[in-house]
Image (cartoon, rainbow, N blue to C red; front, side, top):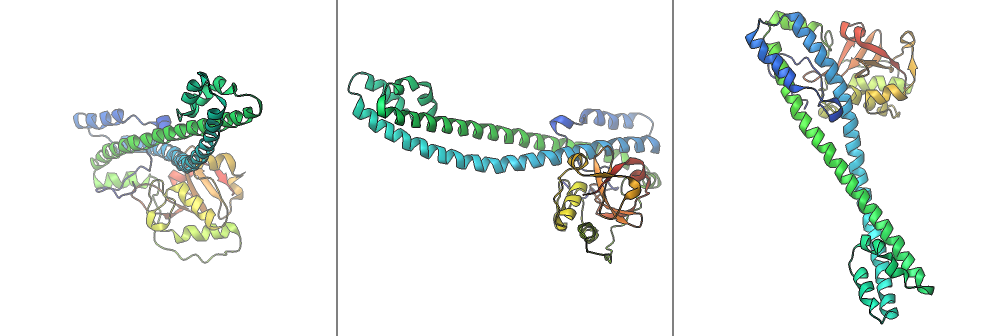
Amino acid sequence: MGARLSGSKSWFRRGLAIATGMIAVGALVGFASRAGASPQPTVAQVQARVDQLTTQFDKVTEQLDQVSQQLSAAQTRLGQVRADVGHANAEYQAELLTTERMAAATFEDAGATSVAGVLTSGNASVVLQEGALLDDMSGSQNYETQELHTAASRLVSVQQELQRTDDGIAVLDTQLTDHKNSLKKLIATEQGTLDSLTLPEQQTVEGNSIGANGSSAPITYTGPTTTQADKAVAFVYDQLGCPYVYGGTGPCNLGYDCSGLMQAAWAAAGVAIPRDTYEDWASLPHIPVGDIEPGDILIYNDEGHAAMYVGDGYIIDAPQTGMDVERIPMSTPWYADSLDGVLSP
């Protein structure tokens, strides 16, 4: 993701559908196919479709940022659980060896065959299931059997957690892969619709789309750098011209998506904020629009998009696939019409 599309500029933003936010690809393909047999879509019709996709892609992108975070956390946890399994297995094997030696010295009757079968199975679950046989070893020896029970229970527990973590990672991987492919189909379908317009008509749509009236040209930041908010603003100025890349959290050569840019900017100022706009909206303080100050985060499009206020009526945003980080008037129609509120980290 994040590669520039050929032909006219892409009008819709990042996003890959996940199971909880799937976009119906077939319906959009049907829209495109009907366009060939029906009268040419008007600019207004194309604009309405683009606006609809803008909202969908914003929301799906932020949902996928959440999934990506969950996947990263699950992969980290997988390494921890694997280490736990190694430790638990070592303890279990040590306790098993101790119990085997004790059993060999204790049992000299026919029952020894059954006990030996349990102990030599190498399966902690079997040890737990056949605990009654081991409980026959009473007295001072009962301590060893209880230790074996404890070690076996711990090993089975971490093995089950390992399986659950593996299964969860597989589900997340499948969701990401399947719906990245869905997004490619969506982009191709809608790009074809846009390409059916004349150049002046395309420019009309562009003028009403996210990122319109912005500039990605470098601007040297000359403001203060005293506060953490000042430092966050200085950071986003330094990112002007960096590419939009779905899921991107920087640095510049790797690109940013909208919430990734906000997180990176405040991290550069020493403040940790959530990765996606939904968590930002839920956890960061809300302030009135009239109290906005440089460094504050503006949330748009039903909590699906974010940009930073940098003063003098401007924001800096990573708008959408095919565009770069840019400085835009806060009053630009798409932003003015889509504003949900302002957050102050």
